[in-house]
Image (cartoon, rainbow, N blue to C red; front, side, top):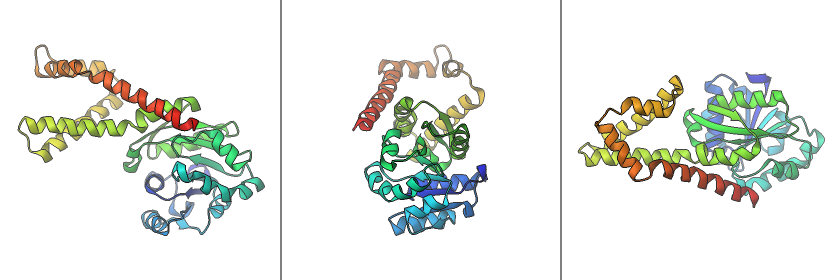
Length: 274
């Protein structure tokens, strides 16, 4: 197990379950190392069924018993989730490494809400964490140690890959990998529409489209060749691919993706400023 840490979760929804399951799958934790709390008994039961983790009656128990605590509640509920923890944190402010996966809430928010010299990592994950293929960015506060950073990265790498960044770059992560799965799903849908228009049955078109994106991404990750070079290797003179590339360029394909990432990052900044 990573760092001999007991890992707690406050909030036991899909993302918490994805992380806990990933830790178990990667053998960085055992079920005995996991504890959690949720105000919803239904969510707690589901989490326990999938992870065999210990469920406790209060969030204070999570903080008292765990070395690492994932704050996995929605941003609009975070204030009420943190309120009961103040007294526990005040007693031993540096005992626990908190890990927030709440979008838009800056490090300063947690430092003020818990009113202690807390150690904190702010994480921007994405939904492919649910299938062990996440892409995350994270930032540490001033009290967190180098060892904390290594621990957080090892945990996040168990459900995909992760990069430590300055906090001001997490909005860019939100616009790219945080929102990016939606753009990829739209691309799968649109490619399959093209396949159907060309005569393919819908189920086959969807499978071919999804596998094409998956395989192309894996080619880049394994070879690390520049995407432009990989694109050129598929693009024969006067062939089918260059005709398609020309159509994409005509309709502003690359510009649209660039704008989508920029708009997502800007919106993340707006939400964090509220």
